Length: 454
Image 1: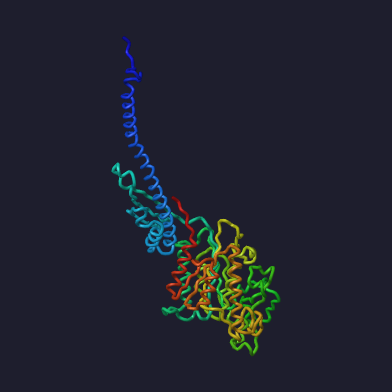
Image 2 (image 1 turned 90 degrees about the vertical axis):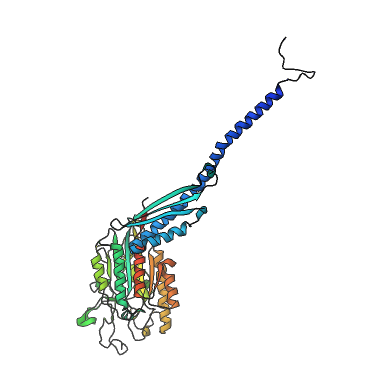
């Protein structure tokens, strides 16, 4: 008798229902077993993504910290760790993603001028805790060294008579300026006399500047006899607008020798000196050697009234490529598009435009009306207008401007200097010599460009 799978009147297979139930149970078991590694894999992917996000954020925070610390270290190593930590915390909150920071370290190598920051954080897991893994540790590190970017920097420094006064802390302001400028050199040069591709000019100003008595070739209508035995000291008058607000070289628009006329109207010049109140320290064109720059700064003498636009225009002229061949210096200003040289001006004043009625300036006497008015307030307002026009032209040429207001509390001057600066962070208000020193060190630290190396 043959075995049959059919039975009963319906002929349906007798064993099929049991076989189907057995298969369903097996698939369910296999599926259940497969879900364990699948869930673990899914959890690993999710938690891995969270860890990657935390790692990326941690690295960005460390990068920001090392760059901030590097700038501070150059200016003041003692503040480096605090500044690095501040930037780190701003970019990686202590409870980011429900985790915590477990380690942070910042180290400055003064010999190599290198800053290194290391950080570690943990983040909680979402799925892997079922496998006993409740936290994931992420780490990040970065180091920064000075970038190989050169610098052409003009120090445009106020040497007006008010700089002989004391600041709010009782320090003579011209002395405070010399200290602050020396601190800037300390940061940029450290213990060296020359830094590759770093050059500075020094431009002392009051109502005129001294370009040097040998530069008679820049002058139009120069008559040596008009100066008598004293000779021409080197100060020049400003050109008519718009050349007084431009970087046009003397070959395109020559200057006139500053000559205080001997007349009864010039009662601020009782000696009859044709060079009266001409700054005794001439402009130093772009120079590489720290010692030469430092000697120029230490020789500054305060005297005279204030025309800030004149000083700033001449600072630009020491950096402008249009003046190549004019300064007859060892280093000529490079082209504006040179990718390896950064150009900047540090522009400092302790006062507003100030024009004494009987005081001879780069624009002559007030009564001469060379600025379109003989009213003192209107003339000083025009000086400020031309200052801002010069600021705009300098920035448009690719030169950064840092402005520093020293021992002043005048909202109008502050507004002018804030607008002149390249950005809000390029403006500094220094009520005292100590704060002036800090401002110059901060600027120097920012000019010391850094690059990440890991």
